[in-house]
Length: 315
Ligand SMILES: CC/C=C\C=C\CC(=O)SCCNC(=O)CCNC(=O)[C@H](O)C(C)(C)COP(=O)(O)OP(=O)(O)OC[C@H]1O[C@@H](n2cnc3c(N)ncnc32)[C@H](O)[C@@H]1OP(=O)(O)O
Image 1 (tube, rainbow, N blue to C red):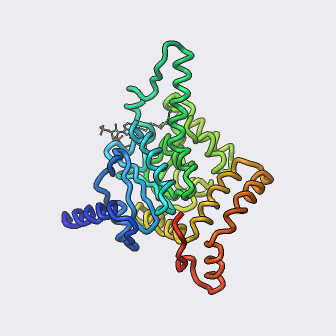
Image 2: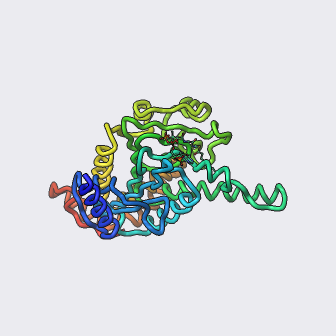
Image 3: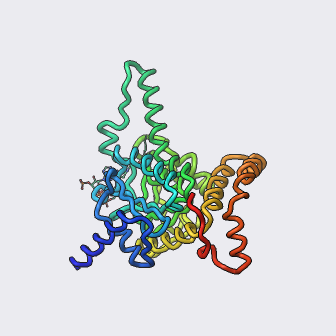
């Protein structure tokens, strides 16, 4: 048992060091869930590369149920800014270490210092508070701004800030034991970092969104699936991580020009009219249709080859 744990830790650290190392199937999943700790310079995140072109970002404060402390709020921005520029990365998986996905904002940090704006009077304090809230919002908006698709895998609880986080992701998966809670009203605040803006766009029913946000009732995995918050439910974390990796590998195998253009245009069209979005798309593709990827992909399709057999340049 001890040996297996040590072996898993060694594989995990090898992952973090060597980019592009492909560990197929279960061994990759084991390594994904066998991180030794946060990856420097991060203290609340662990970042690894479980397969070619796949980056795994793990919320890593398991002993505090991945509560979102001060470090987390800024590290997410640093991490996703790097991922956006990393031409080796084509898709991201986000998950939580330990017992649950996340317990939301770190209540100790919040009580102590997080929401204490400086300023000599109400106007100045309010001004600084606004900047603080905008900074917190960026922690999740950065996921949406990242051109690489982000798959989030939720096990156990996903509370408060966790719902803000997952609604900024592109594909949501969960385990059978997962539950989701828009907890903010219970701690005396209106959710302000994305849930109220994105959740209504994720799940069709406004009535359900209102109910969840106004009562903080828990939404369990079956209902999360039926209302469209998640697209797939897995029996346990291991099978979910395997599913996430399989999905990520499918995305990573395709033209990054096509994939990233698809994400950017899907996000754009969510917030604009059909006519504005078609206009944006036409402008987008006036350059992107000239990519070599189109020629390569079309040729592969005609030869009945899988996109996985095509070599695309980095983006
Ligand atoms: C500008 C504002 C931006 C964002 C705002 C976001 C709003 C929110 O996120 S609201 C949601 C706040 N979170 C909560 O109310 C959840 C609180 N936690 C729990 O209810 C439970 O911990 C649990 C998630 C149900 C998990 O239960 P369990 O598995 O039994 O673990 P515990 O024994 O309760 O906790 C273990 C350990 O973690 C610490 N901890 C858990 N959650 C938090 C948290 N949110 N903040 C700080 N610390 C947390 C807990 O204190 C324990 O620590 P010990 O040192 O071991 O005692």
